[in-house]
Image 1 (cartoon, rainbow, N blue to C red):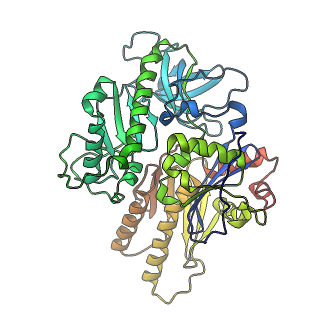
Image 2: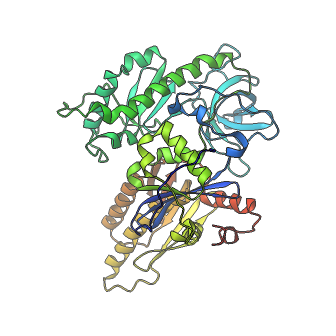
Image 3: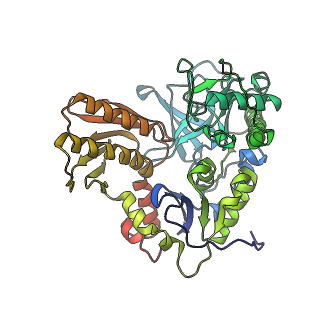
Amino acid sequence: MGREVSVPKVSLPKKTKSVLILLKERNRILSLLLSSGRLTALSVWPDETENEGSAGSASPSSGGPAAREGAKSPGTPAARLNSIYVGKVMNVAKNINAAFVELTKGQRAFLPLSHMASARILNRKADGRILAGDELLVQVGREAVKTKEPVLTTEISLAGRYAVVFPGKESGRLQFSGKLSDKARQQITEALAAADIREETLTAQGCSLIVRTNAGALMQEDSKTPVHNESVPLYDDAGQSVHSAGAPLPANTEKPAADDLAPLIREAQALIRQASALWQNAGTRTCYSCLYRPESGYLTEIRDTPQEQYEEILTDDPALYEEIRAFLERSCPQALSALRLYQDSAVSLRNLYGLPAKIREAYGKRVWLKSGGYLVIEPTEALTVIDVNSGKYTGKKGTRDTFRLINREAALEIARQLRLRNLSGIILVDFISMEKKEDEKELLQLLSSELKKDPVKTAVVDMTPLGLVEITRKKVRRSIYEQLSEFSAAAGKENHEAAFHEKTV
């Protein structure tokens, strides 16, 4: 942290440049992804570096120690997403089929009991029941939201940029993201086998492995377009739907250079070692131990963002630049060349990209469409309602074509807004009514196609008899409204507008 760094100055970027920007403000880190000048992702994270130092020792790809003892002082930070604990069951609520688990003294979390086949009880012999007093190996699967506790899972996993390893879960399975082509899966399988990573060796180490979509970017041939046999089950990066390595695949005619997949192989080997050690050592750890605490959220967000989505990673904070650089060196060195420290004193990084206005748009109620139509987005406690309006549209098309145009444009923008605002749970969309059933079918197909691109599991359920389109999106993090409200409170401001004044952001 103390050494001087020699970094290139950045010139004024083109408006079309895709960039990942990280800003440090009031003990918070803001992560913003811009594509062609538009904000496509925004997250607010606590700046934990001053409290706990670098989390590099917990990084799967760093090869560091497999476990760190969780802090037990009054200043213990909130349970970080994906952290692994030895928790204690405080009570079991049979009426809601759930248990309340204490992670550290005074820090409680919610554990659904619907999928408990893989639960590992550490202080007694497992008998299929979960009882008060049980000490369980648990992982934080969802952040705390408002008054709700963090949500736990007993399916333990360690994730890297290219792979996810599951210790103790159906050990020996080698699987792939459904977004990878058959050819890519075949080539990766061969490369892993050459490094002695195959189902037999995974079984011996008590692990299963999923190759993530990001691994496709290592291939010489672009594998973003999925080509697969629909009869073979697929899983996503989180383990929901994956192509088994044991299924028949087309013959491979072009073998990639070994170096192409070297980052995947190194990461997979490190993850397997760490997961195996964590699983074996869990039985010797005391209650309330934190066995694994991942890197800060803004660092893992850099890791998980596909490199094709940005040309540069920019920050104007030297200390944050150093932290990111160190993280990239040990986790994804191929992204190091994209990292820049912004040093132009003539214009701030915030104003160069117009970030205050873009952030205000991200939580605004109304979103304008190019056609002159607009969306009204209304989040509530129970669900989110999105209304599509024709607005200022003045085109010469007939009524049917007009409504089709606005609805199609709205569908594309809704898919973008769900990700940008991190809206989750139940979402109801009131599109402009269309008389033709084929137009409704076409609209639902377009919306479904766009939602499949979301890294968070999202799906169109159906259109209700009243013409409302039902969407569900998995909740992982808090919505941008909650994140920005927390930021505003930390800034001592009553609203987002004051907290994101151009002089401070």
